[in-house]
Length: 64
Image (cartoon, rainbow, N blue to C red; front, side, top):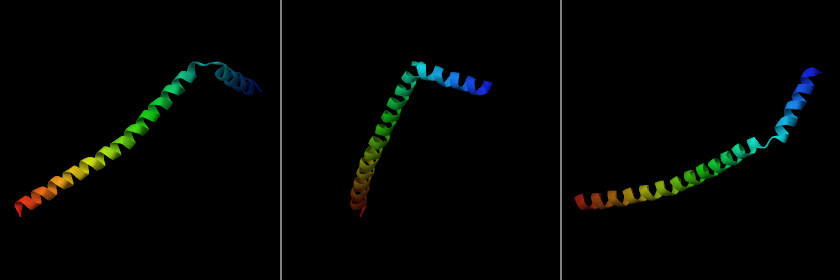
């Protein structure tokens, strides 16, 4: 029974404290920024790939 009371007291203490809330907010912001970066990098990578393909075609036509 003592461990149950200790566990309950610990959970109540966590519920009352607000210091961890800031950490969670920062983690969510960081995750949102990371998601945006991944989506943005995919778009940029596709555009770079298209540019290199266009250059490759022009070089192939110039050599032929």
